[in-house]
Amino acid sequence: MNKLENTTIKPVEQLRLSCLVADCQQNILTITLNRPKVLNAIDLEMAEQFLKSLLAAAKNPAIRAIVLTGAGRAFCAGGDLKFAHQVNPETPGDSFLGSFCQRKSR
Image (cartoon, rainbow, N blue to C red; front, side, top):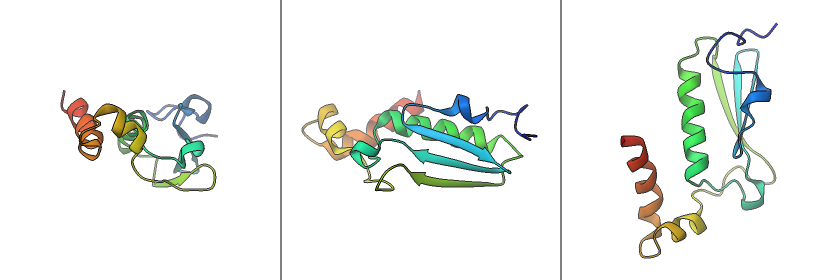
């Protein structure tokens, strides 16, 4: 029996997001970064989905550990520079973190 059925973390079938896959087995939540074509580089959508997953896990007392992994041949290449450059060509490094923080502060 899945101990998480009546908690804030939904069954794994419902946690297949576009950028993340979350699987909870025996009180261990495994979050897989799921953008293997770009070596799991983090864009704004992935960062938001990751934050939502962590906040939901924090509210769930049944989760005792979180494992973070990446799909494909790389764990994570870091921030998605192509995305950052599209958002702000003048200072792409600033735009990635700035965009995320501005959205979270609203």
